Image (cartoon, rainbow, N blue to C red; front, top):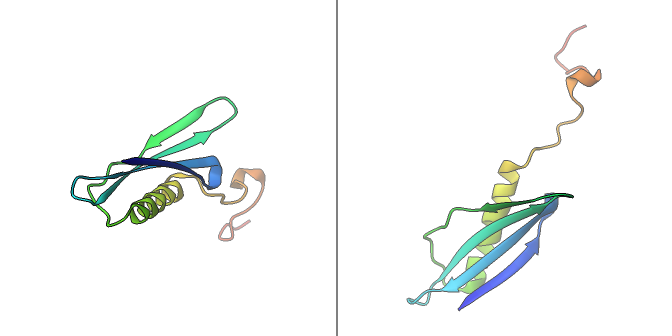
Length: 94
């Protein structure tokens, strides 16, 4: 049986998780990330893992962890105003 759930995440992302119980009783997980803007939707299918889990909850938890890791690694970080905005770097001399 396949179970589907969607969780809101930071940065405007939603995490779509699909878990499925395999014939050996173990659980698999597939993750899709979706980010909506005013005029478009970005969809990212994460690579399918061959890892299997003892429970649906374990598979779901791993899917959310993988999704958050992807968001953290692929979302631009706020680093402050650009140097061109008139702000000097600490190591920059006048």
